[in-house]
Amino acid sequence: MWLIQKLRKIYLIDVFFSLKGNPRACIWLEPLWGIAYNLYVPYVALFMTALGLDEYDIGIVTSIFYASQAVASVLSGVLTDKLGRRKATLIFDVLSWSVPALIWTFAQNAYWFMIAAVFNGLWRITDNSWGLLLIEDADREKIVPMYSLTSVMGLIAAFVAPLSALAVDRFGVEATMRFLYGFTFVSMTTKFVTLFFLSTETAVGKRRLEVTKNKSIFESLWECRFVFLRIIREKRMVLTVGIMAAFSLVNALNDNYFALYLTSSLSIPESSMAIFTMVKSIVRLACMFVLARFVKTDKIMKPMTTAWLMFMLGQLLLLLNPGGKLAMPITFVQVFCEAFALSILYPMTSSILFINADVEERARMNGLVFATIALVTAVFPFVVGYFATFSLRIPFIVNIAIYILAIFMTMAISKLPPKPEDAE
Image 1 (cartoon, one colour):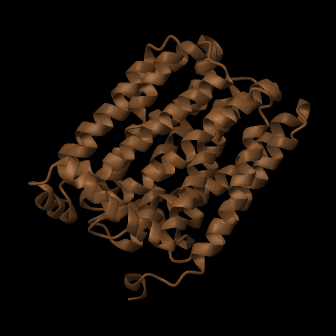
Image 2: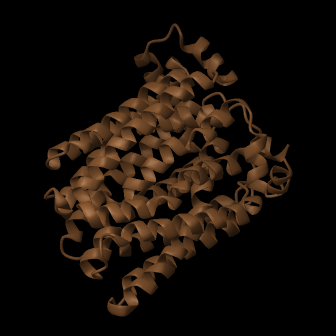
């Protein structure tokens, strides 16, 4: 008891212990998803290349992934309202994570990854429904720290990441990844089923179930045209879409090409990827606990601009890394810069849409925004993948250009007057 009282003086830990209802169920179960995801994600690109995929194939898989997200995003709001937050989360969590994990476990060539990408893209539906399940009955001021906590739950994997490095050294990338994907299937499926039974439908969710119970999905989809017009006519929402798209695209390019660049261009051993993941996770954890109290969605200019600049500095260090004896030290500095940036960008970009969207139309507005982001970014991995066959430096040059644009968008949205409910 004494220890808990001491720990609760730390802002994020106090928020963690004060959670109730759906937020508690969502966040406390998150390690079952986050640990599995963070264990396998550093080796995805290396696993693909081990099975014969090249940079161009990886670009195609990523584009299919985004195309699937685009379709799923359009449907996400309608399905979330029609099925309810809980049921939609269970169904599409299983389809978008459990099913692909099984496919990846037994994958043999590029076609397996393409099929898995179609299913994996459905995560946009559960991203919408799970996010609403998390925040709709929660206090507004806790939304950003709650998203920080969801990231913290996943980053616990930092303390077991060296095990995957040891496994890669002993058994190789392919055997290790097949085991990790099998573990992912069991861990994530357990989380999805448990969350369904521990959660309850939100107040807004119950109203939307009542409103849509006599409407067909096609009728609700047709009504989305008016919701979309509301989005594109509001400058705040347009800038929100742009900021989220920038963050999403850079993450995709980093996930696909970071490990490849380190191993092929800088001759860093494959097993070191888990070490970098561990360091990144520990730095993100530390930064989140220190910065969480100061990161607020009503004052985004300084924290987000600082984060964009830190990420750009990391990309420059990656491009200027001469290799040899300096390869590892400079990469560690780059990883620190990226981790610092992510500790701010992840909770802010995750919560900014849920806060700016209309309360009663959150599900459909979120879905259409996710669809727009997916469409905007779908073609980029394919194009960048093509140019990456000539030089693996190109994806990181593109990242810098994207974040320069993101800084201007952040400046623009910070100058807008507050929403009426914010002013109140």
